[in-house]
Length: 294
Image 1 (tube, one colour):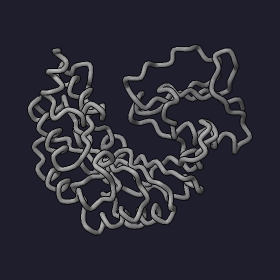
Image 2 (cartoon, one colour):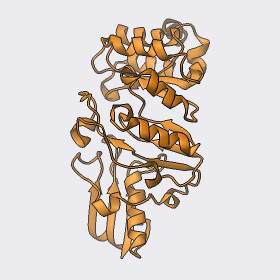
Image 3 (tube, rainbow, N blue to C red):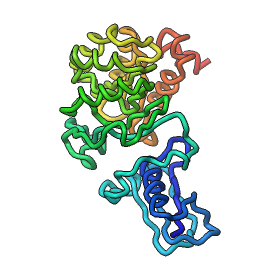
Image 4 (cartoon, helix red, strand yellow):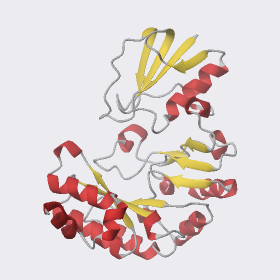
């Protein structure tokens, strides 16, 4: 068969589902390529992760058009035989980084997050590292809450044994941090760590962030905390979290929920905080606002 693939979100970050579909079809002897609207295909797969991504409206010549991913709906899943495939990294020309999930699901059930609805309210093991890593220098993990999985010790051990540089892209749940987990994380090779302080009323998060700040072997610029704004917090609470994180040695990173509805001040806060050069050259957000007025 001739198989066409479409990454609706673009090629800035590889789509894991498409890499697995590519591997599955190539294993079955099918011809696979990025879909071209001028070419005929037996199947075209369109993958979309983000709802805000503009849809691909090209008319593809195909007998079967299959759309999937959270950008379309939360129920679509890969066929089991495709899900088990080792990703075809050559699809994106990737040579030095492995991408994948060791766990799926999260017990938090946050209202702004789709993970609970899509993957369930229990963090469970879905793979071993060998299922998507075969010696690459870097590992990009997509897990929503690895520390909530009962198998966290074994999985972190696999990552440590790989000697590869590990990036927890979705962040680690600092509320679940213990001395044992911190020691396991510090056995890994990593440059940066990501955490989150989504709820301004959550005192446990700040307490844990402060408690473990000097435990992890990374600079303040690489100890990153996502700060959710424009969801369940006031403008004052947003600034408070940003400044408190700076005070205890973290780099905040503002995530704006539904940016189209965010007030100007929140969007300015995001630009100020997420531009590291500006953030660390000015003492506070008020200084940045004065510079804007000038």
